[in-house]
Length: 274
Image: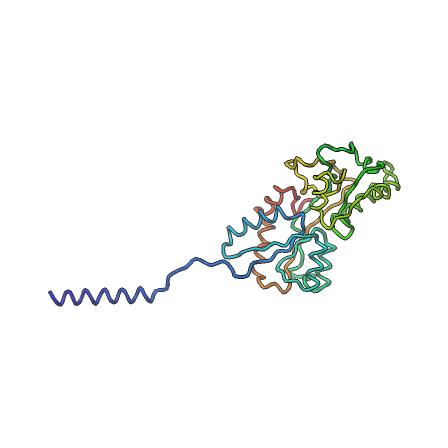
């Protein structure tokens, strides 16, 4: 009997030692350093949704977003600001980052188009200036707000005005007359939308994705295809990214069918759409 108890005790001791030597499996902890995504201000709502969905699929990756005008972000990169991804609202600002040595000009990590957009005119919901057509933007006394020329949305707006001025329906006087009504040039397109929504301007030019039908603070006036400007959004890995694989995974997700569906939900056109 005594020998049986000794054998049982020995067996229990051996089992305890084996369990002590077996490491416990712990879930992957989030990375101590977040993936930093520098993105155009017009992408804010869509990218925050994309980020939440991406984190659900990659729980070990945390994300920090830096939203601002593309020209501001490009300048930050040129001046050495840390980042992992840059998503711009036009190729011009992406080219600034390429010229500054922060983004590859070609190869697997070079910029790729992930979304497209178009311009619309936004008006306060009560439309105090009674703007009914694009020609009305040239009426005396209209208070217009645009993004600055250095901002992609501002450059696109100038291209639209130039397109209109080249037609018989608007004449070459249209662009300079409309521009004489500008009361403020903003550093990003969201500021344009905010000023119009608050009634600080009679009209503004923004992206279609900035003014969804659910936004009851503004009304929209469409710009026909013949005058509109194709808007393209490139995204690229920052060359000295500390998390290149996570950055590449995020780009892959944005370009996936699921990512493109999310962008469409926020009013963007797909990467392959004209």
